[in-house]
Amino acid sequence: MIKNYLYNASYQILLLLLPFITVPYVTRVLGDDALGTFAFSISITQYFVLFSALGVQMYGSRAIAQARDSRESVSKTFLEIYKLQLLSSALTFTVFALLFFREGNAIYFAQSLYLIGIMFDITWLYVGVEDFKKIAIRNGVIKLVSVIGIFTLVKSPDDLLLYTIILSLSVAAGQMVMFWGIKKQVDYIPTKWPDSFKHLLPVLVLFVPPLSIGIYTFLDKFFLGTLTDSLSDVAIYDTGQKVIRMVLAVVSALSIVVMPRVANQLATNDTTSARRNLEKSFQFVSIIGFAFGFGLIAIAKEFVPWFFGEEFTGVIDVFYYSALLIIPVGISNVFGFQYLVAVGQQKKYAISTIAAAVASISLNLLLIPYYGYIGASITILLVETIGALLLVYFSRDFFDLRKMFKPYGWLLTASFLMVLVVRVIGAWLGVGITTTFVQVILGAVVYLVFLTLVHVIDYKEVQAIVKRIIKR
Image 1 (cartoon, rainbow, N blue to C red):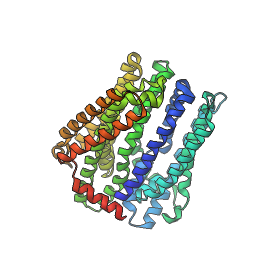
Image 2 (cartoon, rainbow, N blue to C red):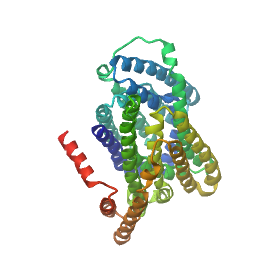
Image 3 (cartoon, rainbow, N blue to C red):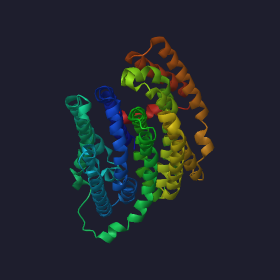
Image 4 (cartoon, rainbow, N blue to C red):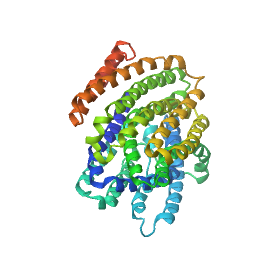
């Protein structure tokens, strides 16, 4: 599992680093109006992406994990579910084309490539059989090519359409290449449509969480674009959220690895191993979540101006008011995706996301007209916290919550010490790339050393893991 996490985490780190290379260039070349147009349009397109994918990603990876002890079972399960995915993605693409394929909507035509990508998205198969190496390497190469394309071809706000095509095409290509070598995982077994439709109900149940999550991760930009009539607000909010979500991807990478392993362990009644893996996962995402959440707040004032440019200084406020959402999202990943979905209690997972979606709509309508992107930032933090608390409540009978949350006092203390050191460095050195580098390094050292001294981080356990990695 450590090796799989490293592959997935490496890929997520690559996804984190590449935007850090491209974003400063794109914000200056395209500007806030063009990026606001892109963010507003993609917020609409992403809903079609959700309906195209249904709940296949979560359901498919779990179903494959439960069947992976038999190649025949894996093959049959994969083909049954994939036929269902093809049907839903084809129908969604048709509706999208009828609504947006008309003169003057070229950007939506370009974004339709995201929907084509869903037709070929079988990453859930590789997640289920825990083959993360293939996902990381193939998609990583394509992402690097897309970065070269952005720097080579995107030169002005007039290149917004070209920028959109590069991003959407890289996603579609990343899904298509996963079919290369698929015969190593599955054999062709003729299946009938009734065999596929038997998966429809559980897929639809698992579709509720991503749909609900989509409401409060995409609808906020839609509300900003309509309630404030300011594409600049959309661009500032979207740019800040992109950074937060990129950092969050590193935390979430563990969930993708742990869920199929836990599902397989629970399917074989190995409850003790499953609980141990989940508790270690929770400890990890908590340590990383506090570091990244408070870290972004601490470096914001000196980081944003040189990284995004003066036009995007409002991103500082986005960090201040919403960066801490990394903590509740990490908690949600463990209690929701890694546990409740793995044990088949997706209805509880769905309830928490529905409640969060309702809260998101209400708070966005209340706050955005008066506070703009700051209101949206406050809303997303509150919404993620509500969802996390509900998931903890629904999982209370399986976990020793007192034991798991006990280190949070130390994590909070370590975070405050880190913020103090980082802010002193910022006040001393001022805005600049050197300042950010020094802040990140010294802040991380203070944070990790403190947690090691109070035994939240077990030095011997970390040392043992490193030795195992080196041997591999």
